[in-house]
Each structure stands twice: as C-alpha cells, then as structure tokens.
Image 1 (spheres, rainbow, N blue to C red):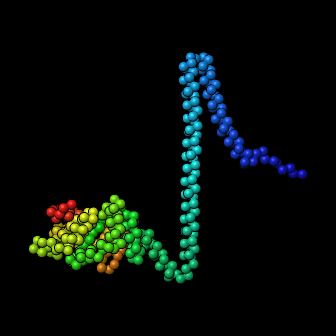
Image 2 (tube, one colour):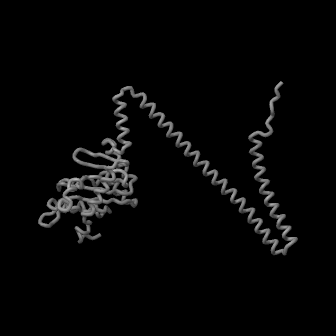
Image 3 (cartoon, rainbow, N blue to C red):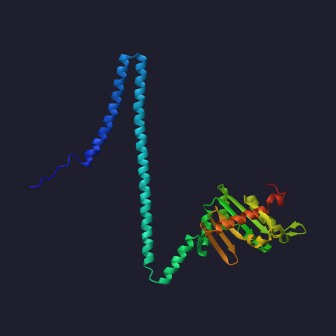
Length: 292
C-alpha cells in the first residue's frame, strides 16, 4: 500500500511564517540594542551608555526604514513589469489579428497592394489621403514648425487670407500659445510685391499679421537667390512644412506628399530651409518702422 506523503507546510503557512520571521527580526534587533545599551551602562559612564543606546535605536530605525524603502521599490518595479507585460500582450493580440485579416484576403493582387502600402509607410512615404489629415493631427502635438512658403505670384500670396479661420491656422495659433515655435520663410519676388519701391498693401498686411501672431517670418527675395546660387535656384523654391524635424509635408501643383524618418526627404528639406535662411531678411529688417 502506497502511503501519500503529507506536506509539512502549505503556501499559506509559509506566508504566515515569513511575516512572523520579519516581525521576530525586528524584535530581536530592538532587544539587542537595549542589551548592548545596558552593558555599555555597566562598563562605561552614563553619558557613553546614552550615546551608545541612542546610536543603537537610530540604527534600528534606519534598518526598518531601509527595509520599507526596498519593499516600496520592489512593489513599484513589480507594477511596472506588470504594465509592460499587459502592453506586450495587447500588441501581440493586435499583430495576430492583423496577420489573420491579411491572410483572409483572397486576391493576390490586393495582397500585393497592401504590402506595397506597408512598405511605403515603413520607408517614410505616406500616401496622399493620409497626408491630408495627418498635418492637422501633427499640429496638435508639434512644438516646432519650420516652413517654406514659395509664392510665384502675388495672387498665390493672397491665398493666405483664406486661411485665417481655417483649422490649420487655428492650430498654429494654439501651438504658439502653448510655447511652441513657428519659423516660416516667405520666398517672393521683389517685382511682384514692390511697385516703385512701395509695398503692395495686401501683401504687407499678410506678413504683418503673422509677425504679430508670433510667427518668426523671414523674407527671401527670389532675385537674390537667382544671383547667388543659380544651381540651387529651382531646388530651393519649394513649399514644405517640417514638423519637429521628424516629418515633412510637401505641396506643389500635383498635390501633397508626406514623408517621415527614415526617409531622406526630411533631412533634404531641413537643408533647404537652412539655405533659405542664409539669404533671408527678418521682418524688422524689411519693415524697420513697424512697432512691436
């Protein structure tokens, strides 16, 4: 007949013993301090005994405090690990669901389109339908905007009058209000905005409004660029907006395109922006009489 071995202690008993053991250690430490103080009182002067006793009590309290600090640190670490495991579990579930959905696409051509779409985003090229909405999303959390505004004609500069009430400009003002920064280079022709040395009134008001709203605007004359760097003349005259030096929105007659790292286009636009600034003049340099 096989006799079942009885466990000496259950997990519950072990937990209780652990509590008792910790409590006993505290009591023993305290009694040791009292005993050490008594011995010191017998063999030393009362003042020495008081000093030894005080140090012993202080040591006991310090040990207890360190134990609590270690316990709190372990509890915090345990919670952080728990949250990270939950996040990993959630991400794994989402990935499995994506793979399942992709596997259920029964047309190989559509599957190929999906893979191309994923590959574009992975390499930092965002489709146009995503770019249209993403610029507003980015403005809500961006802290630095660096933009190039190339206006080939005076009429294109007037288009700014259509933006003052738009969500785009509203979010720009909110960015400035929360302490963000907007730097914009206006690339324009002297011949289009100046007539006999006098500025076009509407063009002046457009620039002045942005200056007063807190935008760090610079004016870049196309004539200056053409004379100084003819080989970069065409490349430097572009419309783009850089968000936190991480993503860039390019706009031209064909539409809008958005890039994000690791696309090289982000660094290229940053380099063009810096080149524009080297040929730029501040608003106060162009209009020294405007009060700030």
